[in-house]
Length: 361
Ligand code: SF4
Image (cartoon, rainbow, N blue to C red):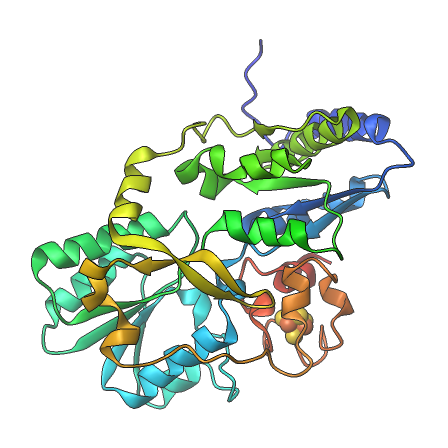
């Protein structure tokens, strides 16, 4: 067997497109959700939607961590920064996300607040260790992909006895939100392109409920051949009615996942309710801090509650994240809302569906 090394090979891509055309039965509507924001970007970047038959429809899902962070969670960040003399440490994608009052973190920084962009949670701990007289708050957003790195940073902070560091525990997990999408009578998703990055940590098993509920589930990489071949797998599963979780990214994802990373994550975090933009509160879909790490919880440390707040008027990010509408159907798209002046997080984040749609259409 010849090993594939060029995952953008045009000849192989064309062959896969022909197979997809041949095997997608005309009377079936193959609605397929790509759950991961990185998949959304790849799909737009390589023009994959445009080469598929009409009845093979790709829908973007709730897989961009910045986008699914609820308005209440965002507002809680602003409350902590505005009411306390702290330094905020965050990933760069959050800088342009606006609070309910229309301000973003760039505005707050220009007003003199100390807000720093970091690349890793461990950098956040090191920063706090260097300046022991200041309080540091790290915005801990992400899915199962990022949670082990945040957990590992907290273990390090605990080991070092650092008391001027805490996190906003905003990490979310995939299985519950996927279940919620399956329960939604407005959606008729036949299959999922399962997120490759999350799967590196979790392995196949978290997607098993999808197959058990009669949906195709294919763990997918991010190159054109990965995506096209996964779509073909999904179409074949739908046609045969024989559903399973197929690992089509085995060059990176081990079926069992990364047990060490899961163990680190489980040492620090426990399942908790979480607020999702557009989807509301989902039981067990968040990662709260275990009792022994509660001193690192910024919400408790600064006595802030996550308010229950609706999205801004006119913003349809929630509907985009649920796959109800395409970005261009939001009335603000391309008018009041552009990457330069984003209204909602789906236009802010580099992995947001609206930003990808705008950039590549
Ligand atoms: Fe939200 Fe802007 Fe997208 Fe509309 S176009 S859904 S306001 S990000």
